[in-house]
Image 1 (spheres, rainbow, N blue to C red):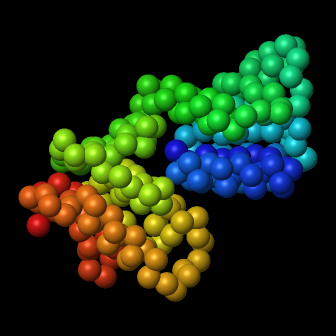
Image 2: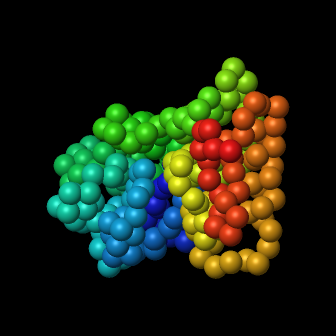
Length: 226
């Protein structure tokens, strides 16, 4: 999943970003309501985690503005205000779920996965397939034919992005920004190393390769390309 966390408390935000990334997801952060609105409106996120009390624009206002623009990205509200009236107000403002603080990260993760699954029922793919290779975004299970393939979190994110863009050339810049969250080139071979490891796991021992290097351009995953 690709998530946006809109939270002004730096410690809380750092904790959530780290926890979601360790769970294998992409997590961006906005420190106030205006920044959160701009990122949410311009980004392709599976879900938003929105603190209710934010500087510059409060969380309910952010969600309301997105809904007014026709943006229906699922939004979970985090708040220290946990009374029934508070939760009702949050849901009526356009929130899809409401979790009072303090909370368990395991519960937060489960709730976000449910929101993403619901969105998947409205057209967002939860499973990617290329030939006999299948990736389940929610269970983090990858199989090729009848064989399960075990991937590290970064390898899973790399494969997920490649399969999302199956049949298209994916450049190094695209991978750095969307898989590694870098907006600069670290001038290392980190991408080549991970692609090599991924190729060994998904192609080695199978009749035809799926992951290909497009010389001078980037990488492509496609069934039947030789």
